[in-house]
Length: 149
Image (cartoon, rainbow, N blue to C red; front, side, top):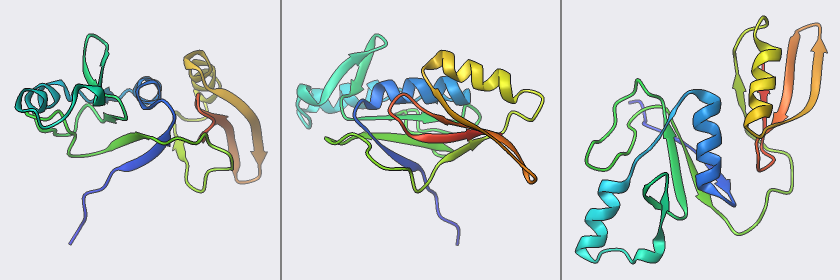
């Protein structure tokens, strides 16, 4: 049996993190506004759990991005394939990630991709050249490490 999964990333600002990673990966930010409006209308959730973001209702403490080719539930906007979910936590990141993403634009596009990601708010930590390969170690806007290979 295989399992469906998503990668959950702690964030102090889930909406901004989702915007960054949607642009970085070419993913789509999930639109949960129909679900939120339905739940608000039923009185199932208080309005304080939501915010206006990109001219639509969004969860204040959760945001997700999904691969544009993967299926999703139209009624909820929830992706059913490759996705990243950002959840608000009270504390900022303080230590090195134990898990990180590797982006693979290819050696001929590595530097241009790193520059594009810097333009989106990422930071270059270091450039690595080893016998096994080359890559750029970067941080997203909240300091989570990832590599561009």
